[in-house]
Length: 247
View 1 (cartoon, rainbow, N blue to C red):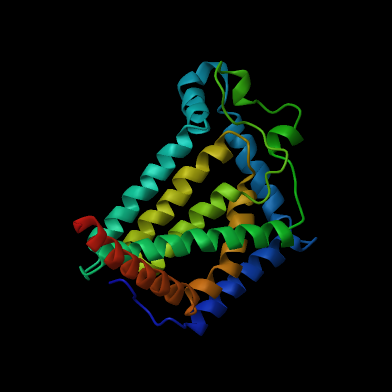
View 2 (cartoon, rainbow, N blue to C red):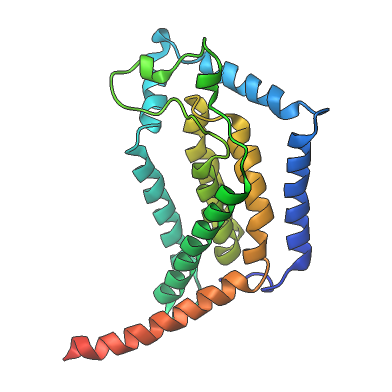
């Protein structure tokens, strides 16, 4: 169903916020080097796969980090969105209702992005810039691809995928939500495999921001009522335009 739990869910809000705070404290604590060890383990393991005797894998990683591949992720999200719309049991104004949800998603993403840019002042370079002996996929292929980032923390790409997944889970239910969560893993992986992002850029940085900020929209009436208001506006606009088309 379209709405599976109350507009205001304080227990969910508190749980997600505490989980996000726990991630931040686990990263911030000088006595806990879990993230540093995990980042190095993931990077050195995956970077070792990039070599001249493994060119099939090299081309796969390079193509997945090509700018055009972002279009594939957009098409995948569009397919999940269409699936969510088709599963909506309420037929009346279905497309306009999901138009309201989609516009609310874009509005939320823009606000979260601005808050992140203002609040999160810490930045670091990608592992391919930190380690001099790192293999860069750009050295192994003769076409454009992404292998470095001067400011890889947090991953904006990962955060946008997580915002989409959170909205799908909230408005379309667990089945669509799980598929959307799978897209987060699938489409954030190339950045890690190519060395343009650390593992923690996505699964600490992006995830912590999502856990702290998104519940204030999705576990409160804010997002549902914003989507409903936009939907009502779209319905009024459609009613005014349809007679004009008939003429």
